[in-house]
Length: 439
Image (cartoon, rainbow, N blue to C red; front, top):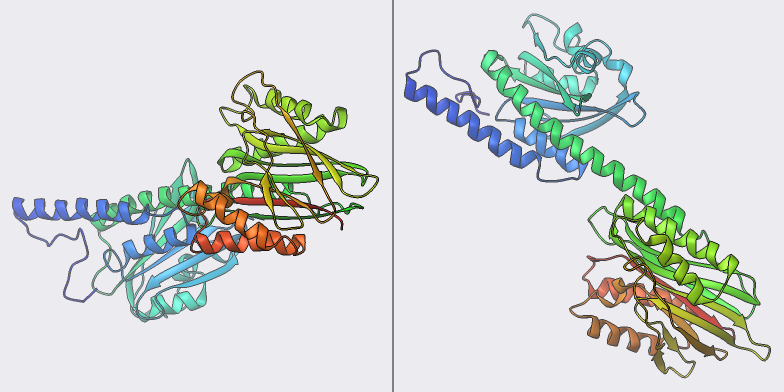
């Protein structure tokens, strides 16, 4: 802000009705623009920076946003203003701001501090209370501020942070400025609260999703297993792709599936699906019976979510190779990669689980000779490009080229191909599970 300009909303001492109307319109336009600016992202750091940019230089020369950390005992601060760096982030004990910041959090009422010019600018009691970090306080002191205004950030009945504004000498806060700042603080608080809730939900979903994948695949005599899971890029949400394998070397099971939707709810259904499949297989490993149990669990209990999945039972053959019995609930067909490089889909179909009350699932039998591989994948693999047909054709070609590679190299090649096809911005989660009969 140049010294010759008024802050937004500041009215000269004498105005006629038309001029007063113009000031009111400026204030309304400022708040409308600021609302769009601060609510334009659900990324918490971006929202803080957008909020500070809405304050400086339009409403203040310097601004600070402090939020209580997840532990409730740490402040996370970020500032904007001149002179000094455009932004800086600090973490420090909440007790450092016990006088001013804690009062704002406790009372939910703004505080205005008038800083006397003859006072030591770095250590006045009030300034220390509102700006507890010494490095940040030096930025404020360089302004020789006339006023420092502290405002609570409150949403859904909880004050979780503060907004502190400073103005240089000659531009102190008057009643109309404080009123405008309070209105802006309300908008900032709502935007920050939405971003905080989004980050919290994404964190919970990430933890849930990580807990739903096996820590490691089993070591099975006569077979080699490899898997990959990669969440979609950029949206911060966790999808419902999952895989699992369990049992002993003579008789074991696998599943790979995809829950509709994203977020915490999808992660919860993913957990239910995975544990239902495991539990059902302990009673009856027949693939048709296992998928029927999954469908029964999902019917009417998951608020419209459904699951596509492939479940298989694997038994080792006495003379070498593997016998696989497989059933599908609306999932992309598994692909058999022969050691020769020939690739063939498994002809098995079925309705996605959770759509209708009673479903019968057909089974298919697959014989894997030594060196043959069965590959399961979610639609994030084949839908990375422009069409599913092209994606399936590319996947088939890749599998043929990697028929002689190790299973780890094969699933890694699939992951890399998806990233390349999507230009590094993956639209959907991907999960891949490959099992090979030992040569």
